Image (cartoon, rainbow, N blue to C red):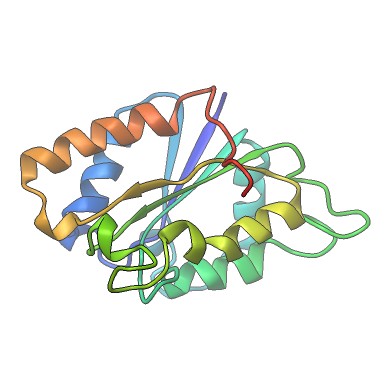
Length: 181
């Protein structure tokens, strides 16, 4: 299985968590790492190149820090430009049908803060529903997201372990789709 990891972090060098996840994933020969902010610092996306990359892989991982309960802005721009009618969806848009989509997200807040009784009032899974809806529209199998909570409270050693856990999880060929409520 060929895995494409699209890393959407506007300052990956300054990031402890996403940098750690990315560097650990880069050690894996079965994964292609695509640092989108570094490739497109001007945010001018090469749609044909991005679509070709997606077509060449079986599992697509969108890795990003959770910003204001959503994705970084370039991920949304990338979605709008790349995931197009007639290519990814619509009567003739089938290029991503049957592929797998995995969301890998990091949060500053701990897991308890992302609960109905917590500070944020919603779970991360609830807040990721728009990406799950995109997956449904484009015909990918939406996998249970990898969520790394509380990155600001983790030591470097803990982040190193979480990065290893992430690689094991993201490259597991038997990942499940989330259970329906």
